[in-house]
Amino acid sequence: MNHSSSSHLSSSSHPLARYGWDEGWEAAFAPHAARGLVPGRVVRVDRGLCDVATPDGTVRADTEFVVPRDPVKVVCTGDWAAVDPEGGEPRYVRTLLPRRTAFVRSTSSKRSEGQILAANVDHAIVAVSLAADLDLARVERFLALAWESGAQPVVVLTKTDLVPDAVGLSYLVQDVETAAPGACVLAVSARTGEGLDVLAAVVAGGTSVLLGQSGAGKSTLANALLGEDVMDVQATRDVDGKGRHTTTTRNLLVLPGGGVLIDTPGLRGVGLWDAGAGVGQVFSEIEELAATCRFHDCAHGSEPGCAVLAAVESGALPERRLVSYRKLLRENERIVAKTDARLRAEIRREWKRRGAEGRAAMEAKRGRQR
Ligand code: GDP
Ligand code: ZN
Image (cartoon, rainbow, N blue to C red; front, side, top):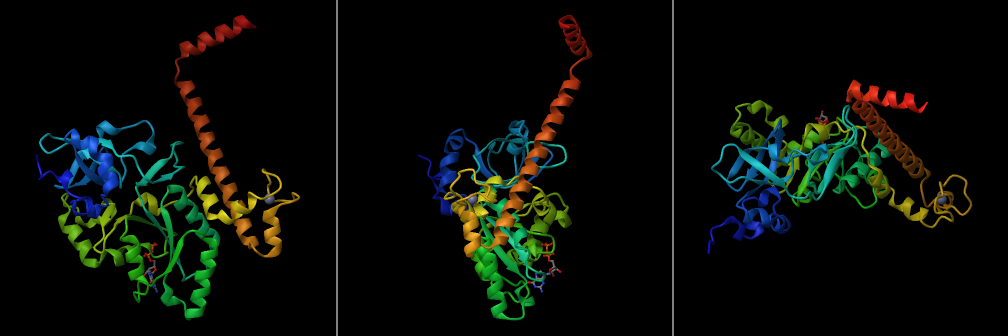
């Protein structure tokens, strides 16, 4: 009977609770605990090594044993890992717990399979600046990425201090709400502090990422959630002695008000994504209408009995939503087509790699057949 073992602690008093450890992870980890492995959350990954937050502090671990062919399955910031216990050098990551959610970039210049950017994210905070005119199509695009990942999207309208009147602000919030069914919409100002308490409460319940255009106010929000002094603590604790790089290399941060923030460079520069399923959720009211169109493959163009066009005509569905929906679907198709083209190019290269001997043999065979 060993009552001091960490696995006997309830999940809320577990040393990893502030990293998001809960009963679900505890259960998933049980077989690995039985093998004597230690649980931990990946806070940073670089070139075959990663930093894992464990009950005994942050451990540098080798990822050699978890190198799959599929780049989406490689160790990623936010993953829960089973790591070797203290003793051996180096310590290895032995396995990853199955992910609940994942942000995957479908297109990077070289790969066709996609690139994993963040794992086990509960809330995708989509920052939208009120300093410029609202671009609802852009909001919808970020929402599609969020839904696609499995995370719950939250739209945060930033810089409310720049909106002169409260009535104007409430209209802006309403506009965004019609573009974001199923997502909560908040309005905040980092300058005045308005709404930051609500945002802090939302992110306290899990792991969050910040998405949004450059200039939307993501860094400012991150700093507001982290508190200035927390960033300083991070810098002095940096074991590599590269304190000034802390914010760019350490990608997972525990928030003083509860919750975890993941901020990876890849997530910052999101471009083209394969968000097919996500698009459906952003436009859930259109997909619901489409289910009642006369033809199941209705393109909502000029077909008779089209419920979507009827809703546009009656004013129930803003035409802008239908246009935006079509645009995102088309964009997604282009991404898929590009990915397929890359796959074909890779297959062609593979053929070229095969020896001249093989090719000669094939040609000889063809010659005989002629
Ligand atoms: P990011 O590119 O999304 O990380 O955006 P930043 O956090 O760097 O913010 C972009 C600009 O907006 C900076 O000049 C900030 O000072 C400014 N900004 C951020 N939050 C607020 C706010 O609440 N009110 C005002 N007026 N400006 C803000
Ligand atoms: Zn239709």
